[in-house]
Amino acid sequence: MNQNKNLKTYKIKENVKLRNEQEMEYLSIKDKIIQLQVNTPDITIDETLIGRLSNDKDTDVKKILKKLKLDSEGYGKINDLLKDDQLEEIMIINDKNPVYVYHRREGMMITNITLNNNEIRQIIEKTANQVQRKIDKQTPLLDARLPDGSRINATIPPITPDGPTLTIRKFKKTPITIFDLIRTNTVSTHLAAFLWMIVEGMNAYSSNIIIAGGTGSGKTTTLNCICSFIPPYERVITIEDTLELQINHDHIIRCETRPPNIENKGEITMDMLLKNSLRQRPDKIIVGEVRSKEANTLFGALNTGHSGMGTLHSNSSHETITRLNNPPMNVPKIMINSIDFIIMQKRLYNNKK
Ligand SMILES: Nc1ncnc2c1ncn2[C@@H]1O[C@H](COP(=O)(O)OP(=O)(O)O)[C@@H](O)[C@H]1O
Ligand SMILES: [Mg+2]
Image: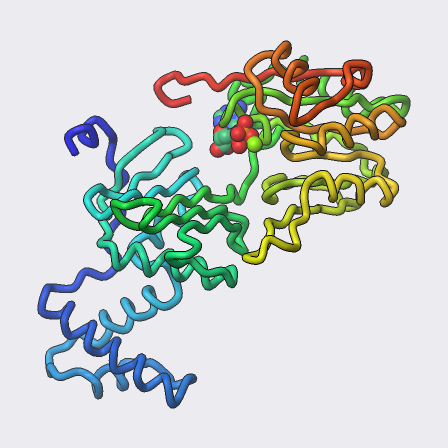
């Protein structure tokens, strides 16, 4: 626990704070409402109803109503965290530690929120319901994308014996643009102009580009930024494991893979999507993250005159080529020539980043 003391605290104002005895009253009213809803699902929940259901004359019906709304519409205590676009990640590891957040400027922080196992389970169930999936002893992990684009990963015992966990990677509503990269000195104006030239292709030839680097080095962000240089008359097809790219382009088809179902059927892989995209007359194929068999298909396409861009996890340009040449990607050496540029990235930590 002491290690948490080294972290800054992200404080949220508690939305509705109930005294202990009010908390009991609140839970009893909530129970009664749930029972009522069985017979009359669209019952209006207002101050009068709460007044009728409460045992205590002094119950603060306004406060109870507000808390009921928060509990039913949102994600309870972590609601405010979900709304803050400055937070990259929200991490719940158990009921003993506070909820952690990763702040875009401040890095890892603790919050003034702690959840009990029940509350954690409730949030997990709620997110699972939203994507029509379930999490139970048989399938104790859940990886899914919420309708707002956020990515969630939840685990429950037995795979995390200490209790349920939840990791939410939030979708940034306002994506980083090339102008942001210039402003924060990630790229110079010269480099930005150069990238523009090679992506746009000056009506002659647009380059095939691999963006490589470690996890969190900003590969996807760079890809997203340089996609703004794709000329408007090009037909773009993107292929991703999880929709992450936010490309501002009218003529675009976005494809996303699908995991196999419980009977291990129905899987749609990157490679299948890529093969399909070649039948869709793409001008530009964009592969979110190249990591397996699809590499071979992609390079086949690049060698037959298609144009493409993608990211790849690796620590040097040399390693990028080695990884492409070897299993599971298996791109023949002779095909590697179709890459025009490898953009290598590294994440720099300057106390922040
Ligand atoms: N140049 C940058 N300056 C500051 N933050 C950045 C920069 N590029 C990316 N980020 C942030 O770093 C995080 C990881 O970036 P991402 O592009 O997803 O990395 P990768 O695809 O390499 O895993 C994101 O939250 C993103 O907003
Ligand atoms: Mg990425």
